[in-house]
Image 1 (cartoon, one colour):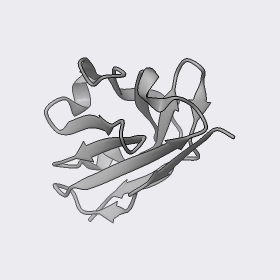
Image 2 (tube, rainbow, N blue to C red):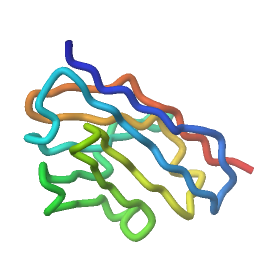
Image 3 (cartoon, rainbow, N blue to C red):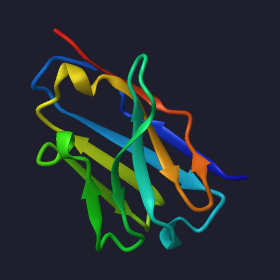
Length: 114
């Protein structure tokens, strides 16, 4: 059974930091490119960052570049998203995604507010 389980979401003040985790099971995690997506209230889901199977290639959307870091530990089947200098516009539900074969986690909520 395929599972992607995110954790680490929380309420944080602007300028704060969080680390999201996504534990994968039921498929060969180390063979697949992985992504973090987010969906803000009233907006469409968007990709935030991606990382290749061996961590050699990472990509970010411009609004998070320099503040977010995507990484993975293939020995632990875990994907991470380190988020620093958080802004209110980062408020969203964050999802991990394996685009091919199109597996999604249930999401973890991040709220940035004073």
